[in-house]
Image (cartoon, rainbow, N blue to C red; front, side, top):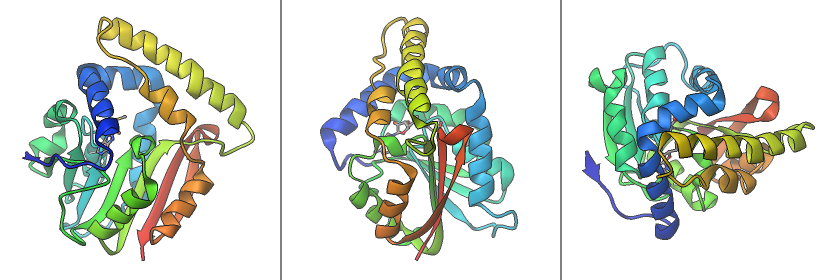
Length: 244
Ligand SMILES: C[S@@+](CC[C@H](N)C(=O)[O-])C[C@H]1O[C@@H](n2cnc3c(N)ncnc32)[C@H](O)[C@@H]1O
């Protein structure tokens, strides 16, 4: 695993790293519990839409904020010829990737690094994807500019996240995700980690996250042609696109 220490916003990145370090051991359990297992379904749909069935065996995809490797593993399940680089700011989180099939099969490399300032050469990837990470990007224009730099021409981009203000049910979803899920999360984290992990991330990042239309504009401004799909009454968004 290579180590890259530079980051776009060191204080915020330290805060996120610290929270995920404390959560890493129980991340999979908490994720399952809080999403009632629906997160797996959304990773499946996101990958199905991002990666065509007849993929060239040499395709290399970067999974930003790979965490414990669920998204990369789903990509590998659907396309065993694929090669994935998993990047994350948290060493503790990616240690758990090593349990995934994609890693055991030798189809995944792991790198420590920040989405806004990656260590990769220009046009290094056929695609860049992320699952439930986009809420943590503090500077979208420069982060997407960086993604544009490392993807080849007509390469793919995909971001799976919780959607905000996407449908008329938005106020109800805001209460559910922003308050109820957050409360459930805090409770679960307190029990599972015996009070060791803070749980400030979901509520804060959700409240300031962009709507799908705002995201589409940010991606378009950064040189991507995008469309998006919504799931679970607009509470999930899958941004899909091509680099121009
Ligand atoms: C909610 S987890 C998602 C993990 C995984 N993608 C999944 O689908 O389960 C978010 C992950 O993003 C990482 N992360 C947050 N901000 C990041 C950044 N700026 N660059 C790289 N990774 C980041 C965190 O350390 C954490 O592992």
